[in-house]
Length: 87
Image (tube, rainbow, N blue to C red):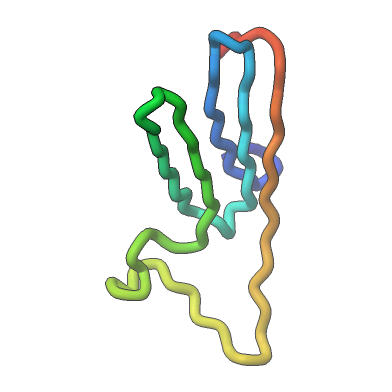
């Protein structure tokens, strides 16, 4: 968590000098990450900010219940950064 009340996750590709950064407000206090490797050696990655853990509807862990007239909103975003990987 940083001073802007966001979480930040970085996926790096050092050989290309690329960083994919996903940021999310702390309302999204979980992150689902899925990686699929194809037989060709290529892979895909899916990153999804979430407000509760996986299987929350079954376990009831971390669910946020809101009334029909209430709203829950939060933002998240993705940035592609090029350059040196220093950290």
